[in-house]
Length: 449
Image (cartoon, rainbow, N blue to C red; front, side):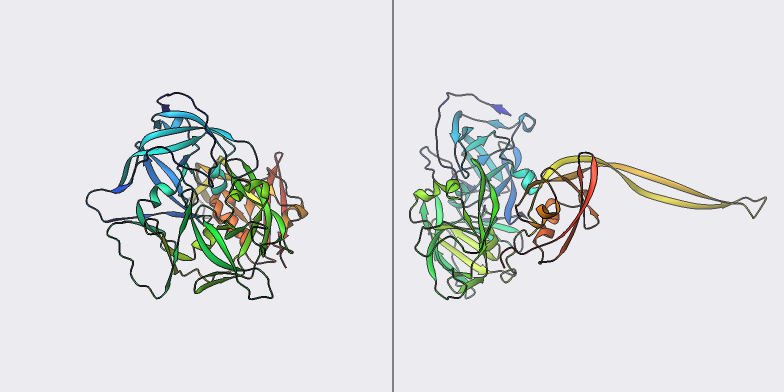
């Protein structure tokens, strides 16, 4: 990575929750007289991932409405990315650990298709422990949010895996009987929505809550304990790994509530997480906030953000009625690098006979092999009391097979999806530990009954 050096300063800010931009920032525009630009994206673990060129280098970003500034990570010398006008800073975000070292860079060129900005600020994180790529199984270089949302009307069609960016000036909101439009409020560049939740299993009472709209959070919803008289610690829950922020690992209570009410739409039995208060201490400084609405809810709609008019529109999608599930195995799996695998390519079989004697035939087997690098996956965490822990699976076990399939032929999300199936589904794993293979079998277990 090439960096044009500048003076050093130290600046603390609360990433993902509290941040004010105090310097002039660029603006994204449609070029070549385009009125809109539509791009395809990958949906990985409910997150929207798409490429953007930064100073001529193509990088993968998560589109995250929950961030007020653009962050880069997983950048090294091999990437040869030039960054302009840099300063050393410190960042603090989700998690309970200390702030980390980073770099602020100004005046960068961002482009994807017919969308361009020539004066973008970004923040570069060098902490190797913050590694979304291994968690998602695809190289992720950064997170971008407010800087795109502020300049366009942004429509995310989760069903078609398409995002459309419209010129805000000429965009007309059509009347849609199957849609629901809400007012947005903003705090430190982040959008909030007022909705209702049904917390008690035996009650129809709707509790009003203000939630951050967080397209970069893969969960359905987070609620913050005691931020409303009705939001109390859940009675039925288990402690789970909720994710990882810049400031460390996030744990919390995972449970299920009766429903979330979004205007005329009601989603039943969503999974909800109550994060550890130490991990969200900075978020709790915004007293009006009760939690977050995440991508496991957003993906059930076509979502249109209009920051300039302060509106968000939800249109029911094809996955609206899909049940909410969680990882019943207790295994958190991550990418573990590549392995050189010898594979049988094809074989030709020839039958030849000896002309002198019909009693003597020969069979010729012609084997061909190919060598290719394949992904490997290892266990990152094992939840206490889970089926995986009960049978003896351990952190750093390398998963070789799952239900008879070699994992190197599968993507990370294809493997993890098997942990989200129905209760009592059998999981057979072959893992490598200390140079030896071990076989384990367990059934998925619903810990929230």
